[in-house]
Amino acid sequence: PQVLPRSSPGPPQVLPRSSPGPLQVLSRSSPGPPQVLPRSSPGPPQVLPRSSPGPPQVLPRSSPGPPQVLPRSFPGTPLVLPRSSPGPPQVLPRSSPGPPQVLPRYSPGTPQVLPRYSPGTPQVLPRSSPGPPQVLPRSSPGPP
Image 1 (cartoon, rainbow, N blue to C red):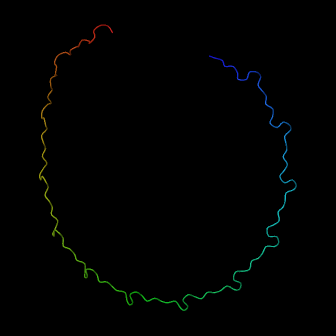
Image 2 (cartoon, rainbow, N blue to C red):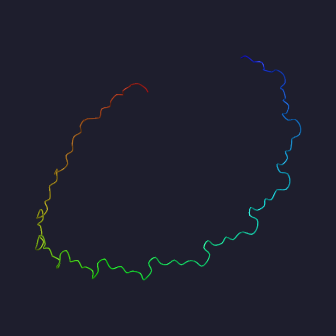
Image 3 (cartoon, helix red, strand yellow):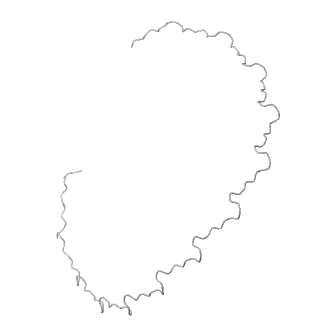
């Protein structure tokens, strides 16, 4: 790799301060004790007079006199509406008059005892392949 030379060979330059010397102490904008501003309205507070001096006014009633009693919308005794079906209530007859019917049993008599499905001693089925079991040779003979 190429080693580029420095743009300014030599010891680094030390730049001088922009404002050499001791630090300047700025003076206050208003030197001296703080000013106390006078009040905007000096003197005792003003007491404003009432907007309507004198005793309070009592307004007359909008409708002077005793209160009006409105008549009823239906004057007189209240209406008694007749019943929709006047008279004693009707007793409907039974749909099937008489004592209730007792239905006979579905299969009267003693219950039937069904015979067994296969009566007798159970059958012993012969083996599907009689004889000693066959020993099949190995698929890959030889030592493992």
